[in-house]
Length: 507
Image 1 (cartoon, rainbow, N blue to C red):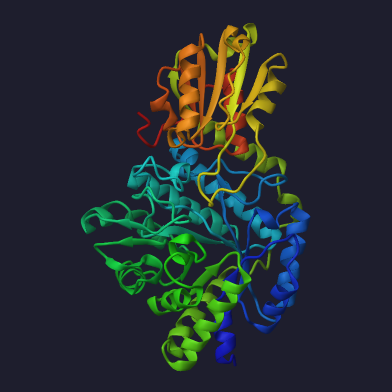
Image 2 (cartoon, rainbow, N blue to C red):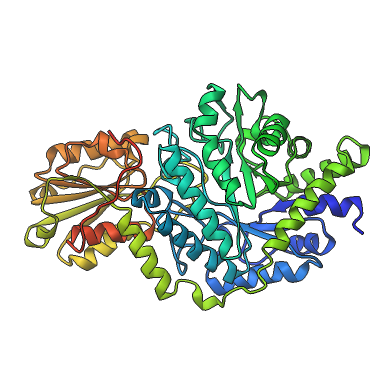
């Protein structure tokens, strides 16, 4: 029989820094002070290292634990080098192939299971309403709610048949704002009819598909609850998600250390309000002091009667059910990670998700002319996206075309490009969300105006195509995962003709 302190501890999920669990995390797991952990790129070095880290966490706890991670594919993936990468949501949407989307999710799920990770914070169910949203973009399947719903449900099935709990996010929809909740509190002012017809549909389909968990977002929806963000709103968690949509699984928050919350309220009180609203799993990603404050505040509220023990028991029942459904008893061997079959599937999916938006240049003739390639480095537009090595595209392009003249461009560096570059017959220009970065966009526009011929590769989302429409040829990768960037080079080499369909209006 658990005492009240242990019951509260089972609800707490925390992150930490380092390639091995710190002593205090192992102590918390051993004492039941937390119910599990979740990982970021800061915790990842290699498949064997991650497997060992997870094993240490599991061995420390005298009870089954949850181990989570964000492995969406595309621009948000905590496991990259040495692991299989999926092309991401918008690229999968461009394939129009739900079976392929399910297969990619199952691939990612198998690799998580091999590592001992039984909870994935994916798929993203947000609809791409706003091109200027810095945290959604190519993480969304696209603009059409039916297509988003179909693809999300397929990914739920794929992850969960691999033995990993899927988490549909960010409820009730993060796409209709231009504010990144990592940076501030967002507010959506729109009719409930629109919300029900558009944003809620993918979540309804995910619930029907048996999704294990729903993650809430730190956004205020005026027509639902003008006072509280979704993470702290009983109207949204208990009334809408549970009573109206009929969801019976676990509910988690997005990270409670985002500025949308920390700029408004302390860690302890925010955790209490989440639990009162009906949340099962408050997530605190980074700071030990905030993690300790959250636990202490929820325990004190339970001891005082502000949170009833019955409310705690409801959450424990849902959490234990999720653990029992995804125990990883038959996890695959580690050699499934980045295996040949997975690489082949990722390649096929990335190629199917590539879009040839404008075909003004003969791609297969590049080897017969003088070509320069200019690749803009990726700026971190949102804390959801972690840094990764640059020049994957340029390096692979140089392997395919050894004589090509490749250059990396810093969007913030206004140094003049060498005049000799513009003597090239063709410039291949790769942009990354230039429409959100004035300095990058201005430089890209100047290059398009001056060059003889430009092949534009829009990495990440495809909106740069509208801002750089004068390019002779436009290819959209619909996300800049490694498989998608490699697929773009293969298309430039004439290996295949892209046939993906854009899922947003890029003009």
